[in-house]
Amino acid sequence: MARIIPLSEGSFTVDATKKFVPYNPSVDTLQQRSGGSLLVEIQPFLVITNQDFILFDTGLGLRNKDGVLQIHQHLIDNGVNPMEITKVLMSHLHNDHSGGVSAIDTITGQRQLTFPHATYYVNRQELQYGLEHDGKSYNSEYISLLQNYDNVIFTEGNGTIDDYISYEVTGGHCPYHQVFLIDDEDGKVFFGGDEAPQMSYMLRRFAAKYDYDGKRGLELREQFKKRGKADEWTFLFYHDTKTPFTKFK
Image (cartoon, rainbow, N blue to C red; front, side, top):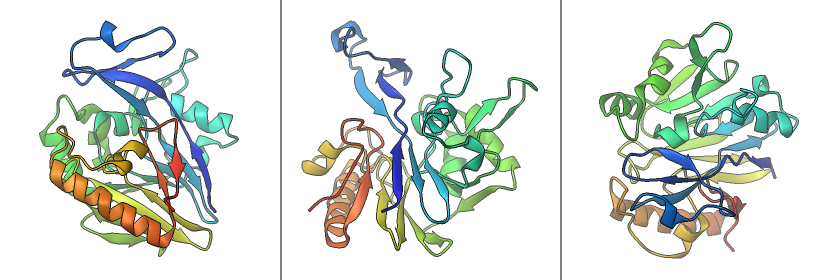
């Protein structure tokens, strides 16, 4: 199997303002937070195949106390130079998934891509939608420069990358959300982004109120689980640090 490395950024609460506030379960309680706050875990993934170092989504873009991007530090802690990343596959561009797409360079003061040697794969309509809906869920400051780089490939519809990674536009969580499936000699690894964000979502039937199309999100999870069982997919869960990845028997 390909090597899978979860890159957990921790737990946060988020309310109607869509701001992510760090949450330490040993000292914090939801009652202390504003009404309607949801507890959210953030977890990009690195998947190492025979061909690539693949990053699935980029987290919140936070820096540690030393000023190092958290996602860069996590990679370094796992023995991977951030400059080794060859592909960045973006499910969608909500802030908690795209905050680490770009960052201000501490020397030049200019915003640039955080993985300059990688090829980014972004749905074209998702970028346009995000720029048009700049605000609570999207931040144009993070994502607008994707238009300016030659190493950004804009996907449309369904397709394949290098004959072993497929992508599908799903449109449940947001209109142009996409999912990815790695399929090589080491097995099949599926990243469902926010269509399949947690183990618990896969175990019960429900339509999420905060999804663009909650009914479609429910149907997609049932389809993915069925396909995943049949073909022995390993599911990656972006919002589940307790069960980062699993197979359904």
